Amino acid sequence: MEEALLTTLGYKDRSREQTDEYEDLAENQVETEPARGLKTVGRSAAGSREAPYECEITHEGRRDDIREEARPGSRGGVRDTARQRLRVNHGEETEEAVEGNRPGERARQELFRTLTDDRVASDSSLTELAEAAGWPLPLAVRAIVPATPGEAQQLASAMDDALVGMFAGRPCLLVPSPDPEVRVPLEHLLRGRFAAVGHAVPLRDTASSLRWALRLAALTPSRPGLEARPVFVDDHLSTLLLLQDEPLAHALAARWLRPLADLTPRQSERLEVTLLAWLEGGGAPEAAKALSVHPQTVRYRMRQLEKLFGTGLRDPRTRFELEMALRSRRLMAQVRRQHSRVTRRTARVIQADFTPVVVGRMARVNGL
Image 1: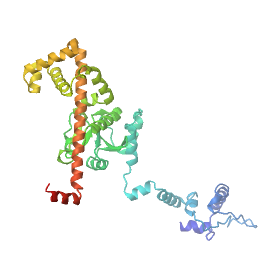
Image 2 (image 1 turned 135 degrees about the horizontal axis):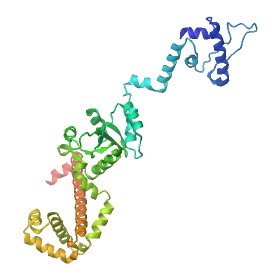
Image 3 (image 1 turned 45 degrees about the vertical axis):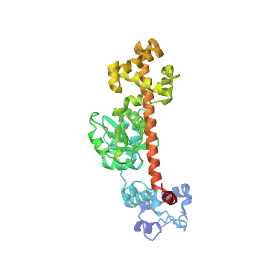
Image 4 (image 1 turned 90 degrees about the vertical axis):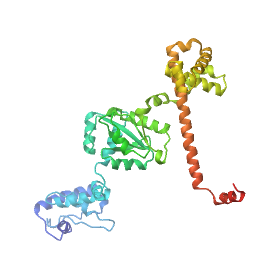
């Protein structure tokens, strides 16, 4: 660098070949880059090649390293140094290496976006992204939706083969699932924390596993403390199928349970429970055992239901629709109870943690 600066300023003689090359570069720089503060004075009257041009260095900001980068010949070391400085200034790979960032983080994020996109990517592009990210493509994957955004990085640090990214505005993870029936390692890693785990799908259906895991997380409220545990889509397939569209589930229940609308809430609930147990069990004795009542009680209620529904209870399609309607209504009631229970528990915790001192004094005075 010192030799290049001395030669440029005219304090050191340069060879004939370098002089010719420098003259051409100087003329091009004057025409294309006048804003860099470089001025070509021109040749001397005697036509000497010792000083083909002079460089005026302004005080508005030197760009000597960029000028030296463009020079050919034996200045390869200067060119490399300038390029490294530019990379440091613009925050590229050199800065990433200095700060200790993972070199394949951008490739991993791009791979996550490609896998979770509904548009089909080519096998070659997926292979290239996987090689750049250092993440071998598995045959099947599972999605994990943590309860809080901060847990995504914690789980990623605990699982070397996890791929982290954003889906529907939430941090999620993708983990290889070589055997869909084996989930003991995941249960061990997620023990003591709430997370929704999607079903094992091929790479082309990664977005499906994420969507159903998000839906299950929305239906299942997180329970803090010792009750926290992961939930798997594999265990709630029928629930997700029935409640994938709650307005449609309400419409199904209203359509097939209309004969019970004129009864009192207590009568309607008792007959609904009896009818569902009878449909699931296949007879009065099985329903009585499930409800812990006498079989005659079940037979009496079934006679009431036959008066309301008529001969439709003997039609297989009607029985199937009735069972779906009753199951969806029961599931929606369970979800509402779970959410209300968690809300009340959270409210009690907040109230216990932030009880005003004045209230406590008033309670002691009144003897409450």
